[in-house]
Image 1: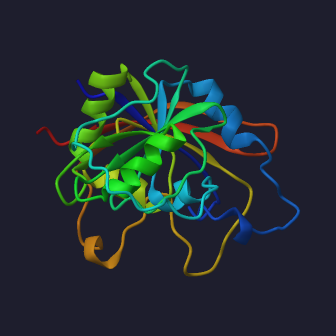
Image 2: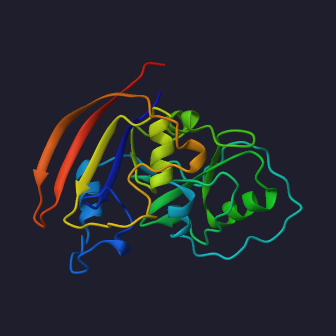
Image 3: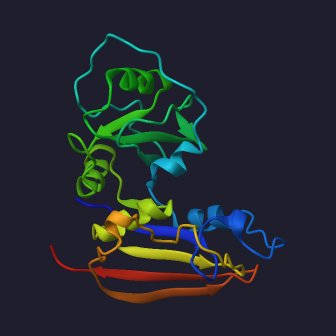
Length: 232
């Protein structure tokens, strides 16, 4: 069964998500993202490799001659929430087993090296496989539901991961806080971003229904939309 997937982000008025570029410089969202994250709740959150890399503490995993079956492996199966990271080629060297107390679960392709799997195990990082050479995004939510009981999954960036999941028809709801700031220049990812290879690939959206709107203390506007996707 697929979990209910909510894309939760904060962005500038022009839909950009790199806060370091926002103006005026005096505006600071503080803990806004985390506060709304907690209000929504959820059993797990998922981010892309670039976002996940920002949490890593290690430099490299040592080489090993040990081999491992390409089967899902879990350091922990019980937690209030899990932090899921898409890392198709196994590039992130974690040096930690959790993010803010949430156990890390990495999504890999089966072509990843045995040395990387050994490193993940030594760090206490769980991992699942979602394809032989590339991640099939459509199977990831179902694995998380089946293996870890995830019923609500928050999709939280970066823009490329958000865009890939949206174009795969997996997003059921959008939670976005429009902040009183503007990026105003080219080059920063948007809330739903794509590379050139997907620039002409439209998301299978058939409808968006506003379900919640709220003006927040800092002048932000919190909007929630139910997403309708094409069947199939």
